[in-house]
Length: 201
Ligand SMILES: Nc1nc2c(ncn2[C@@H]2O[C@H](COP(=O)(O)OP(=O)(O)O)[C@@H](O)[C@H]2O)c(=O)[nH]1
Ligand SMILES: [Mg+2]
Image (cartoon, rainbow, N blue to C red):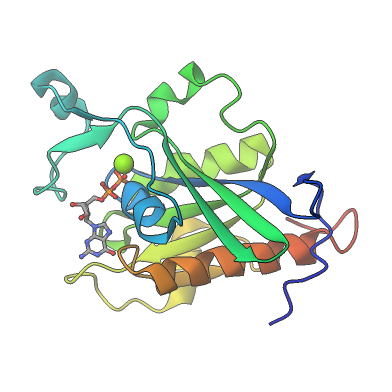
């Protein structure tokens, strides 16, 4: 696939390398930290803080039983896609209710991946809404867990009320190649979007 000539704004360095900020969003425990860690070329930065019992009460840990910590800071990673495009990945903080604390969290973001756990679709509703509200183009990545049911993609699209032009792809966030494919789907989507003003995003 030709990813060259990706003429979206972003930052261009002296050597012609373009840096693009990408958000990795999605509900609690959907695999954001896992994806940033698996795909990053550099050792990703993460600050994890152990969940307090008080927080556990409101985070509905049912369904994410083996998860003992949540990210309250940003995951940050970097991946070179080719010799002219570098993505800087910012995992959104684990709980959307904290997003307002992150002034400028979405500033300069050209696109986002919204991770979805198909066993808990509702956990990603707010992340999707937020991308629409922030007007950040996004793709949906269905992170497949061992006991995820094999739903047809179109069924999930309907359930999440995702417009037809928005890519919905399946992935394994633990797998570098799979996570990279999600980012490539996002770049293609951004490329299509940047093809003309007034296009749906
Ligand atoms: N089986 C499976 N487990 C995953 C996958 N992605 C994440 N996990 C596990 O699910 C839990 C939540 O992932 P995490 O990345 O911390 O979620 P976050 O809250 O979105 O950052 C962790 O225990 C991960 O090891 C996946 O693709 N497959
Ligand atoms: Mg996390």
